[in-house]
Length: 252
Image (cartoon, rainbow, N blue to C red; front, side, top):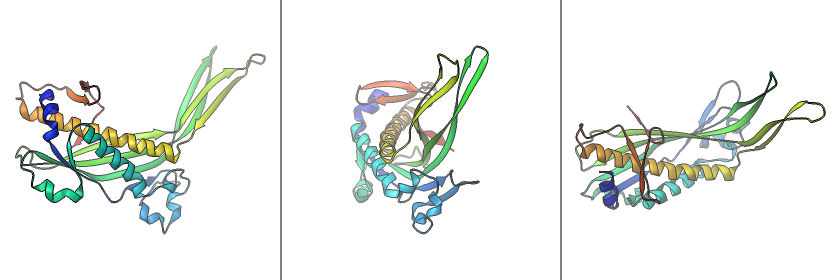
C-alpha cells in the first residue's frame, strides 16, 4: 500500500495555508515569561529584553524561510501543491484533495543548562554550561475533501529546538594535577536560525507526506491487515523506513 501511494502521489492535490502572525514567548525576560506578537514589540521593546534572536525577528523572517522550504520539499515528494491564491482552482478538484493549514506557530527563546562531569580518581568534577535555546512549535490542521472517511480536521503537532553549539572538556594540568575546564561556545546567530527554519520547513513537509501516506494505508487496509508500524519515505533514495517518534503527534 505504501508503494501504491508513492506511485500515485503526483495525483494528490494539497492546499497549504500559513498564518500571518507568530506567537512569541520570551523566557529570558525575568521572573515569568512574556508572551506577545511581534507587532506588539513596535510599541514595547521590553518584550524582547535579554534575547539574542527574538529582538531581531518579525513574522515574515520566521514564516518566509519555513514556507519556502515546506512548499519546495512537498513538490520534491511529487505532490500537486496549491497556495492560497489558487483556492478557486483547488476547490474545483474532483479527486481526493487535502488542505494543510498551519493554524498556529510559536517561537520561544530560553536558557537551559547542561552539566558536564568527570571523575578523576575518586573525585568528581562538574561544570554547568548555560546555553541559549530556540523552540519552534507548529500546530497543523489537515482537512480531507471529496471523501467521507474523515468528518473533522486532524490536528497535528511538532516541536523542535535549536541550541548554542559548544565544545567543552576537562583537562588536568601536567605539573600541578589541577583540573580545568575548557569551553568554546558558538552562539545561535540569525544565519543559523534561518538555516534552522529552513530545516524545519523541509522536515515538516516530510512529516506531512508521511502522515498522508500512513492515512492512505489505514484507509485501504482492514483492521486485521494493519500493523503498528509507521512508514516514512525518502524521496531521494526512493526507500521506505519505519519510525516511532520522528513524525507528527496527532492531538485529540
